[in-house]
Length: 341
Picture 1: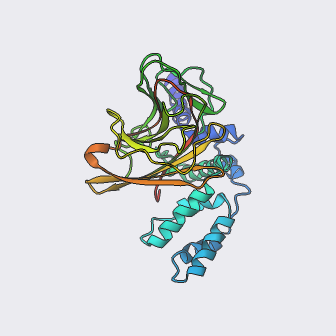
Picture 2 (picture 1 turned 120 degrees about the vertical axis):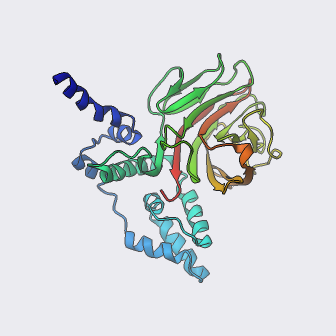
Picture 3 (picture 1 turned 90 degrees about the vertical axis):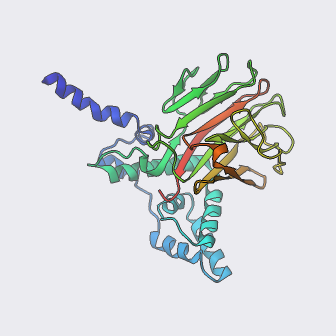
């Protein structure tokens, strides 16, 4: 009987240990008691009434009023992002477009993102006190690659590593590294399956991935990095003039359209941010809308409608590197957000 009680006492700890929110709060110096969670939220004060008014005014018939409302929300800073994601989906195309722009502008600072994730972790766990744990962790998945692993074996935390023998990946200095200069032209992919998060067979009909990524010098144009959703990858070439952005199928690397000039050359001296918005269009197709930003350059945007049979079931997403020669692909964080979650 004592042994059974001991095992039962261990079960909550094992469950919590799988939750990124608990890990992030622990790293920030907070526990998961109600008092500790409320302590983590101290200072997270927003004028929510003012934000709600400005949000409605984003759809105003008056252009100056829409502009003022957008500036008011942006002036609230990164904390407004957490408030925005709590709002239900809107049918107003003007509000939807402006919210997307606000979020893009506020998402650029990754340090702020980690702070926002601490707030999300505390707030969502407070809502779950005394209830069953939400496998979708409050509608957001976040990994900052905080555990040092000199060489990844089969995976990392909830991720699975897909790479042929001889292709090495590791986690160091808060960064996932797919090493370059390796045998074979196959892919190195760190994969998150929907069954791992959000705990369903496939990803939802509408979600967004945001990753901070960067290449190291070497082999300009001979290799690429990017994000894969289902069976389609969005990618570009570090240090290659114009980046050579394209979509391609993962199986067979079939190009889905030609290479595109991004308007800037992806630097190996500073990171880029890639944001992929995914929208399932009924049973026929999936829309992928990609934005790549680099400090000091105008954002690059590209959208594609992919037939359902090409992209397949949205059972997984991944952070990828392809190409035999060339530098390392580095990913310093990944956030996945369910739209309207």
